[in-house]
Amino acid sequence: MMLEFAPVGYGTIGLARNGPVAVLRLQRAQRLNAYTPEMGEDLVRAFELTAKDADLAAVVVTGEGRAFCAGADKDCFTGPPGPSGLALGAEAFVRGYARQIRSHPKLTIAAFNGVAVGIGVTMTLPMDIRLAGAGAALKLNFAELGIVPGFGATYFLPHLVGLGQAKKLLLCEHRVDAFRALELGLVDEVLDDAGLLERAVSLGHAAAQIKPQVRSGIKEALNAGAEAAFEAALGLEASSSLRRGARQ
Image 1: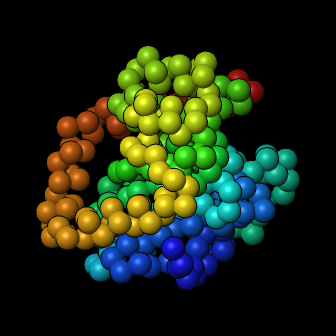
Image 2: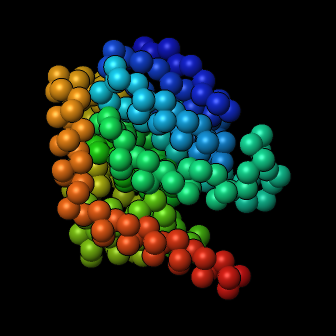
């Protein structure tokens, strides 16, 4: 699918349109789209723009090249701050993204076009639908890094795959291929790699056939019953991270 991507903010992502569907592409292909604070700022900005666009029905997020997102860029832990001047964890993405995406008025779709590691997985969990190319692989390496996952992962994972499987993914298994992720419920469909983006965009076009008020109303109704648990999970993740930081 040929799309013309315009850079957003610091240029770590590109934004394109296909009728009523926006496609956000992580575009640090030389680093396997590894996450930086600048990417976080760009994502927050892009989701703000798409939320306000009355002509959009859906937002698809994918990666450039052979990866979706290879986790946080290691240079963010040891090198100087990037153009934003923000240290990893200080950006708005980390502080408010999960709520921003969960309440986003458009249908949000992740399209895993390759490997997704750590934050590359958890950033998709608040989205509505997750698709994967057959060659994709998902790795939840937080225990290896000695950190507690964020973005509401401790809420979303048990709801998606069950409590036992969530513990297994975070504490034992860590890495799953696309078909195992489908079996668990971590992704909703597995496609041929070549048809992944087209399928994601087609779901967005299908959502565009529904009146905006009905579409957003259905999303709100489906989310409403679990809001208390979601907020509790976010609070526990934050406090756990703070306790760990105090011990270091």
